[in-house]
Length: 99
Image (cartoon, rainbow, N blue to C red; front, top):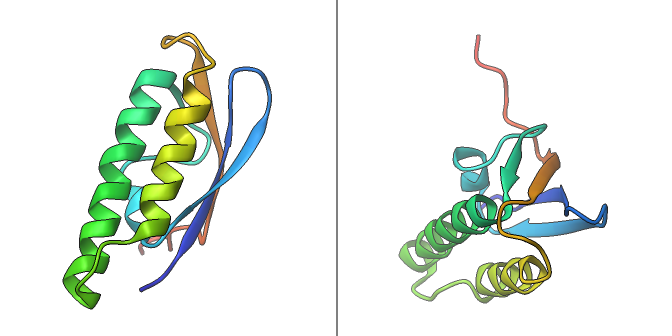
């Protein structure tokens, strides 16, 4: 299963590199976009749950790294106003452009 990273910038300017066991993050986040803290946590939670479910379907067990990433994001988010903005700086690998 292809893994990916995504770099986000929190409202205080801190940049965090996050990991996902699946490219499904592209279905929930877009490079260059900004989301409120609440929306970002929600989108990441749903995406990482889907990624973990994909791992479970393929290998028979949930993905502990997806759960860990989700917890790191939730923990970081508690420091900010829910309406503050989080920016998605990069997602690797990037999606292939369709012709």
